[in-house]
Image 1: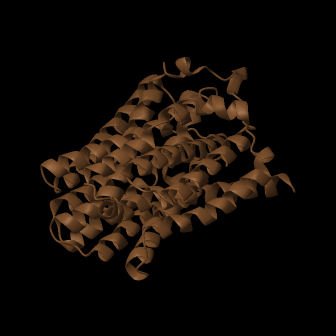
Image 2: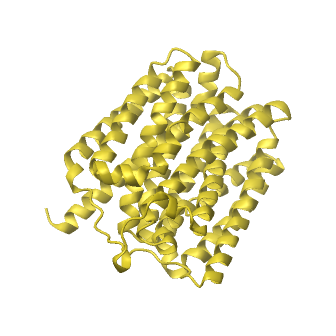
Length: 399
């Protein structure tokens, strides 16, 4: 196979990998209502499951650059896919809350390994536009996850466990593809100016690394908070029919796909930083609509706009990582950022769930608005730091 053919093949497999990554994360928000009734637990238990996704995830992310280097990126990706395969099979047969928590810990590790592996490879090879097109797979998987649960439970009248059986089957296919191509996943990009790969402690001395970690933390929190808790707010807080709420949660996740396709087409003309600023401002508008509780139509418009405008944030930040910290620090930084996203996905929605249980479900919308505002301010701080240090506004690998 030619080099171009091999690149296209790896891009396609990476795309399928992101579809697999998005499906279980998004499905949990819709499936949880059924799990909660089946296991006889409260909404707060969702926070425990989210924290379980975090356990083991942080260390894997922090040391992902080192692990991928030692194992080889292909073997690293294969290990992550195998862990996810095991997690899907386990969740489908879980007998109670404690096994469910343990299995989501395993699933979280697998998701993180696959996620960091694909992104470490992509950050070395793709521009912001290509990175967004690659990440449309996550949006597609995130839209399919809730739709599959809604179809299985509400249309076919089956137990929610069958949803995870469905998730298992394409994951098996992905695992076989990764096993076949594991020798082809190489980091051809070389550190600039003769630099060598840097130890983690040196990467942590760079201010852009910390800005990136905070932005990923907030992004993970608002994305997973809207996807997982938005369904509970619409059904239990505002009396919206479960199938209709599930549809709009799917539309929220579909927005990630649509937004990333649009970004892939437009961002090269507008510039990464301008596009990010515009998107973050529209996210604030979306959270205002969702929080205001002005009726079903503004609520639906709000959650759809949040999904659409969150879409470019993570891919553009990843694509800009080598330009902001240098190629030698990029693998460490990618892992730290993805780990921070996982922490945000676990902690911020869990915190919002606890507050909602005690104060009221409408606090979920307030929490999403506050995170959107803080994200905008942190990004502006990063741009101010770049201007002060005279760094390029946007520097990313050639497509």
